[in-house]
Image 1 (tube, chains in turn cyan, purple):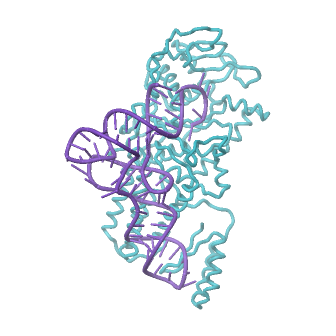
Image 2 (tube, chains in turn yellow, red; image 1 turned 90 degrees about the horizontal axis):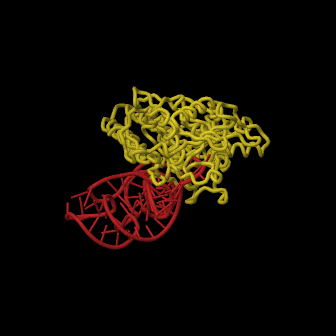
Image 3 (cartoon, protein in one colour; image 1 turned 135 degrees about the horizontal axis):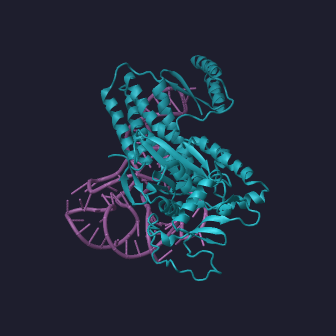
Length: 466
RNA sequence: GGCGCGGUAGCCAAGUGGUAAGGCAGAGGUCUGCAAAACCUUUAUUCGUCGGUUCGACUCCGAUCCGCGCCUCCA
């Protein structure tokens, strides 16, 4: 079966193809930069990364936009408390976010766009809404009138028909006509940061940011829009209301939402102290690859229980994958080609591809990889794996790693040079030959302490860095 | 209350109308000077509970219990 995704809009799995040509136009709701991103954030950002990689594997070109929300209530509050300008304050967390995502090997979207650099686009969008009669002003702020948009609720599948458009009870008590109406432009208050625009001094509402920037770069209709489940309502619902009111066209064809994660079975919360940033976890000496693996291994629409046992298990699984690759690359196999093992490789790749095509079922994809590894290891032990089988087997591993990206160890500073390691291995081999096992073991232990693991094989000593 | 998601072995989890993937952990074994790596065997008569449909359900339907998310800016 072809590539398909679960579309939140239709609540069904649908075959995917871009609207036009080979280019997938995609938008991801990015971070609000008022703090360091946590493990839950990264779960929702690893999902578009896997998605990107798989779309490219399937031959598509990407035009992927991610926003940075760098003006917003909490940012204003916290930057004021820190006595910093908006720009100074957000720069720190924007930089940290980009570093963290790079450390997790998340591909950079084609464009990363900042809200504060697109105020004119937002103003224009609001003016377009104004012209069509979708807005009203209250206390200097501009609001979106939801009653004007009959299909409001189609993404979150909520029925808002019970809300009366004329239910404006008391103007003095409520600044909105309708409880569901949302702000497009917030009038400047006190010393808040503000932009002087035809709409008056103020700043954009959150929802209009994404609509304006998405349409600015991707046009009226996007192929894919991603975000966490919590954003479906009201944020994405409001994006639809804004964009479709302006263009009269369908805003997004495929809405893909990633589930949240819990930590040790509990919701992340400040009181539980279980909100972990990448820095927290690496400080506990968990590796970035293990974090990436754990986050990627559970399909994006499933709630993921993030545990420290899970992180250790992920690290062990990666070891197994790397050991297999090392064996493929370093062992000597008899000349020739085992055709049935070539077929086994093809079967594995087919299973892997089918799993990813099926709404990015990474868990099932992994299963196909591990089954393959077990079978090939068995064949190697039996001497049935031939030199000619190395290339196809490595090609399959490469395909796996082009999506999961966990096989290459992160580069560590310092440590021994290869030549020093080889010299010590030679010394140990000599000691072994002389049956001086105490000496041999000391060398091995010393190297292990430096993060270099030795393994004796039939063809000599094999080593790897940990 | 409305909308949505989920409850599968010690843990993380896939899956399907035809008789339970995979990873980690545990136990035993092979190999090894010892390790490591690898392999083999083993660990769910059962998929929250109770009914129903069916030749047959964990998979469909109903009920019920439990957990979770959203329902004014939280990934």
